[in-house]
Image 1 (cartoon, rainbow, N blue to C red):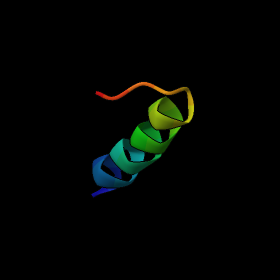
Image 2 (cartoon, rainbow, N blue to C red; image 1 turned 90 degrees about the horizontal axis):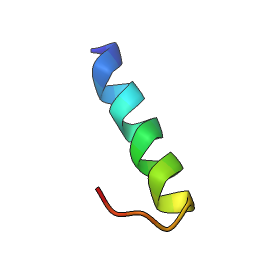
Image 3 (cartoon, rainbow, N blue to C red; image 1 turned 180 degrees about the vertical axis):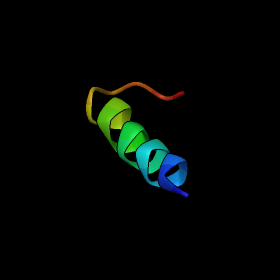
Length: 21
């Protein structure tokens, strides 16, 4: 599902800012 890919991109985006969700 597209949502899974969006989530993956989101994780990398947040972790790139030094945030852990």
